[in-house]
Length: 166
Image (cartoon, rainbow, N blue to C red; front, top):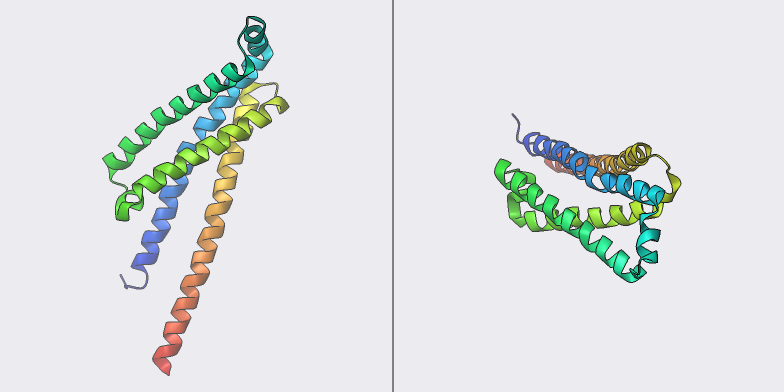
């Protein structure tokens, strides 16, 4: 295969791996909404507040629980990435940055889920909408990045092609 195409094909496969990771990572925040809708329907927060739990304690314990779940899943992601030696994530010391981005995505998505849970009455519908929204946002970002990268490749190849004829 020509040396011009091989690095670009590797980049395209990296985008495919990123899409699969996005699909897997998008499930965790969308699973939070099922519990939140059920909790709102059963009025569990009101029961705890009436029984003497302060709002600060309630929200702090909810945050700690969510972060512990995220850290457990982050550990599983680490094991899978290292186990399969996915070069997109393990090359050039990318692993800590990738794990930090996944964790930041989960924190931001969890905050979004807590804000949006009031709009849903059915846990399954809320989970589906949040999952599709997460995947759609990530997919649009990947497509825009891929288009910009392709435009850069075309620009570089045209400049090199022009230099060879001058």
